[in-house]
Image (cartoon, rainbow, N blue to C red; front, side):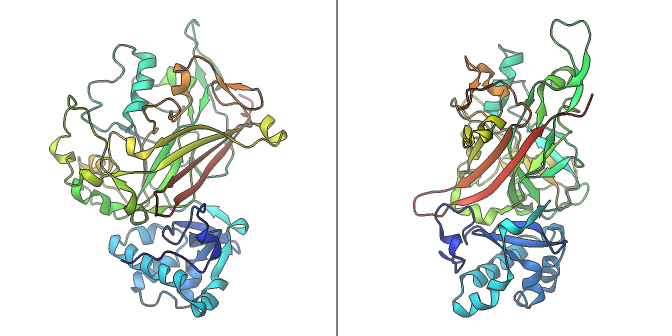
Length: 428
């Protein structure tokens, strides 16, 4: 379809805006104490409940109109790519029209600064993968210097099932967890607050249409089941993790909090930024046939990912947040489509609103590490502009993730922010 280049919403035409008319990510916000679905446009939110209620979506199917009046995105997610594209076309028409369209639709805009964002969907299940080979290699080298990657890594997308109840929206405080830890030289573990709290920079995959139990999703159909992408911070207590993770993997070190960004960027908005999938070294095994896509020349996404930290001392001194790293989604060893297909290859049924996370995203270069644990290979601790140093997060540190796709001649397609501030634990 023809993509509009400008909107009558003036702020959407700012080249630094995350939300031009070519983006239109979906979210859920509170309006007069009721949750409404909206799309971000510049520094405004277009209220889809109001659009449906006032007849601006009447050319669409009754299922789409009804889904736009829901309080979560799940009904819309369940309708599939054809319905999503039809709605997107109509929203672009509303936001790209002339004076009469502006006159009628402008009253349906809500300033972002006045909105309270809510979780965008009822997330039924959450799976976290380990799809970055650079992250897996750096972390593996800390524990197995001579054999950082286990044999299965290049054959099978590794993942585990996470905890849905502790998924929170961007802006929520993150309470430092307590748990068992054991120092290498100690005879027995102790119980207390984690001293090695970390962030993990990830991208979230929100499932749209699901699959029925016992039936897998073919690799060349996988992206048809993806509603959109968001940012994910999979907070991790490394000292708790080191003691508990054998033999069944992550547990209390991960399930105390996971932060997601409020805006879900449609895959359609990212179409101009598709790139070839990660190029595997010649000596690496090829994916098994069920994971071998026919579209590897565009299975990657050129999406820049950034991490920022601001300490309490930096806030007191009015210092801006410091960038800790910059990576790119194109560096994933396993594509988002492969994650969906592998998840269902045994007949597991995904449902609308399920969340799959990529795992920590890192690159090959220094400065692209997706978590603090990976920075342990550096000779010196992280030094902040305030003169403080960090190996792991301290109380009152605030972590912010940002992401955007941008190329010469194309708009910036941004994800907004995924932010969380660490607060002190309760008495352990």
